Amino acid sequence: MTALQMSSASSIGMPSQWSLLLSDLLKSIEEHTMSYADKVRLRCVCASWRSQLPKLHDHPIGTRLPWLLVPFNDNLDSKGASKFYDPLEKKLYELDHLPEAEEKALFKGSTQGGWVVVAETGDKIYVVNPLTRARFQLPPRSKFPDVRKYRANKHDNEYLIREPHDFNEYYQMDATHLRNYFLPKVVLSPSTCDSTDFIAVAIYGEIGRLAYCRRGDKKWHVLSEEFTYSDVRFHEQVLYAVEFNGRLVAFDFNTNASCPKPKEIEIVAPFPTPLTGQLYLVWCSGGIIMVRRDTDLDDEAYDQDVRISVTLGFNIFKLDSTSDDGKGKWCEVESLGDHVLFLGLNSSTAFSCRDFPGCFKGNQIYCTDDNVSADAKGSGRLFDQGVYSLDEKVFERFPAYVGDTRQVWPAPIWIMPK
Image 1 (cartoon, rainbow, N blue to C red):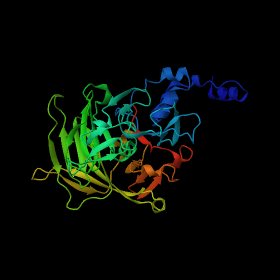
Image 2: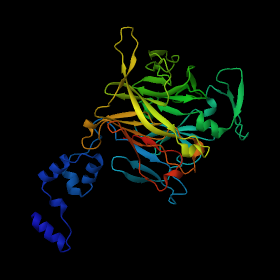
Image 3: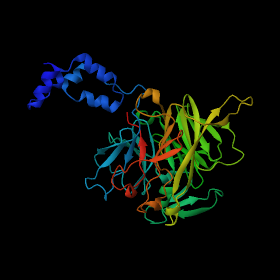
């Protein structure tokens, strides 16, 4: 049947015979289809197309691009569904109800493979895969080094917490406040849940110290008694951690699980003047970069007694390790080149546009709201999340992808499904 015959058949009510499309033309279409999602759709048109096109493997860099996991909200969705937001196609995909994405829980981290770290008000911390529903426990918040006692039945004073500057003094704290403010982030080693010896590292406490555990541990162990850590990130089995003053340290976990905790190695000394704003660590172009998020208080929200930050811009620092004294230093750069960053409570991630031709514009930063005050729920404010162009110095918020975003809670988080 010719193309004209196919058109005529369709016009008189006969089904369009897409399966008869010439094989060479079909393969040419596939070669010019850049989006992974569109390649999947192409194979779903009919069985003939699916059989003619090569099997679709995982993306060449081994991962799907990040999506936002958007929590279920009773006021917005009577179906009880959580959602994924694709920032590339600006589309929303529904997910069966995910109990973890509810008011009682907060997202505390995510890593490749689609794994998300969740902390509940009632002391539990666990890791869940929203797509497969696989789940396993981490040691609870009551097993961190700063907790002396946990009393589940003593409402509003469940925890007895050690003073950060005087280890002989303690004070009481309620479970909700501890969950919201005293556990900013948890990251997982690249082996994640497919291995019996993966590592979880948490920034915890009033002043941001580090603790770690291995799979199967019953408690969290002190990793560093230094304080004010802003971000941590694994590269292979080495953990990199940056303090708010720009000091960069590394912990090598390439040791047997029975060995003592890894030694702290200073890579970059602190800046003479402390940095302001949230800092992120990203592995990009074969090396580490540090990103400073410049924020200011939202005056309108502040009038409501809610301290909420809004993003003004970003500064990029690249690690230069060529100095004669053996210590590295941060050198500010103006551009990410063809790279795109995804920052937030996730393990920060970078992609090159060359690996995804036609999908993204380079020199951009996609970020989520990881500094949201728990008091902001229901305050009528939008999350501080969107995409920032380093070329144009413009921050574009994500669209209202799930009804009234001002009522969604907790803040969405990037996940990286396979």
